[in-house]
Image (cartoon, rainbow, N blue to C red; front, side, top):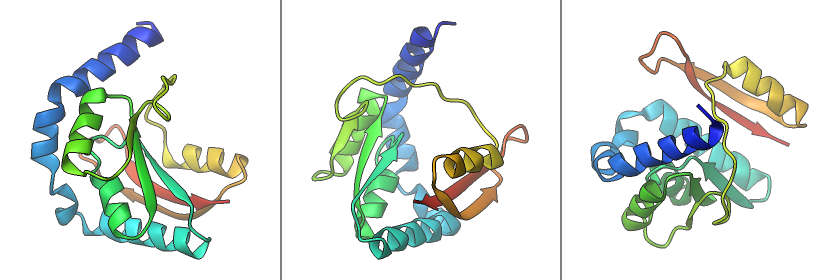
Length: 151
């Protein structure tokens, strides 16, 4: 499958389920205390570093973006799917959500990568990993997790 086909298929898939996804996962963070605490720590790190914009790449329906805003971060969301962005704008009016990057198309090449590899990329880009948390996402083939890094 060509990359353009993969991106188009991914976009179409998320557009198709956007409304249902928004309804099903609207309150998902309520049941994830570890993720909420990690986001709070991230927002605190941003404040301690002097603030500035925070982008939620792959924001979907905007749950995390809105949560970060509620924690005082100047967050905005970017997603490949116009349908997901429409749901984010509907559910979180007043928060900026863009399709692509700044409203411009973007090239996306996404794969599951081990956290240690992503941490290595961040280190190579001059960012320091402040926190690394791995958690079970229900698929034994891949691990889930969150990295908090800063420059």
